[in-house]
Amino acid sequence: MNISNKIQSIILKKKSNICVSLDYTKSSQILNTVELLKGLIIMIKLHCDIIEDFSETFIKKLVSLCKDNDILILEDRKFADIGNTFKHQFTGGIFKINTWCDLITIHSIAGDGPIKEFAKIKSKEQGALIIAQMSNKNNLFTAEYTANTKKIAKENIGSVAGFICQEKLSSSTNLLSFVPGVNRHTSSDTSDQKYTTPECAMEKGADVLIIGRGIINSTNMLEECNIYKEIAWK
Ligand code: 5BU
Image 1: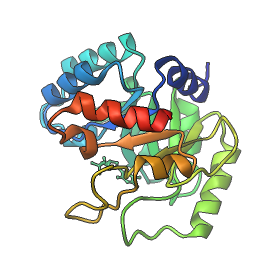
Image 2: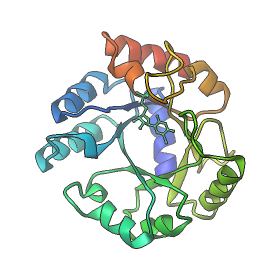
Image 3: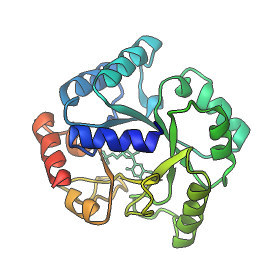
Image 4: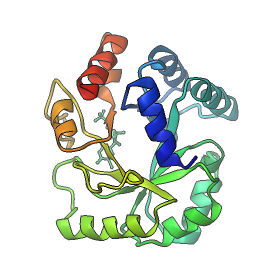
């Protein structure tokens, strides 16, 4: 099964389209939160390079927990370099992202080079999300850049599973829309993040909602996650 089909089948099975962004610095926080929310979410998003105690033992535990509970792992590495450097960043260093991720994020600023490289080295079930729009204020994305990014995605269906975006960008079931910057309580953070509500993101055609602090900073994560899940499912 390709990754787009797998995502859709998990969404239907778990009646959820929630990806929780686990922007924690300690591996135990990640494992504990997945354990708590495992029935409500379909995906977790990581920034592996902010985890202070990243280790092989941790990632093995995480992969096994996620596999047992139909949770996909998205590494939000935002690759943006030439194909050859991408290859080393994806497969090498201390993270060896290719050995544990289901999905990665890639910028299209370098053109289709990194995507083409990814297609060569990825496993059959891995996919890339291409960043077509961002949520924060003052970003440099333009309509033309987004249109060119859509073109790269269409030409690389199979390795590209969808977009990181703020609205639905394709009617193809092979190119899903993943929307970050979702929060039901606030419209911004103390930095540059801009939030939309879960209702608004769904109205604009999101397939998957990516929610970080809206859930992980809540005093009752389970309840809060369930509220997002129910709003989006409705
Ligand atoms: P938050 O806590 O819900 O604000 O976290 C949002 C996450 O999504 C965080 O990990 C960001 O790096 C990520 N993100 C984003 O917020 N906006 C974007 O346009 C992209 C990624 Br691309």
